[in-house]
Image: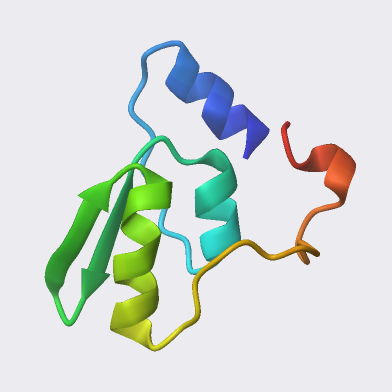
Length: 76
């Protein structure tokens, strides 16, 4: 993810398909949410997350214990 972020920072386009919303929140500059073949959100991750959660029947909010990455990797 750090390599992809560095690639985007130098002006190259990076498209990644993720099902791990916490990674999208942590690394993406823009999030496009697709459900049933339709775009339901296209915004910065914080703004797109509620639509993603609603579309897939998930809760949204801040997880006090991120589960995929160690806390020291969160800002990498």
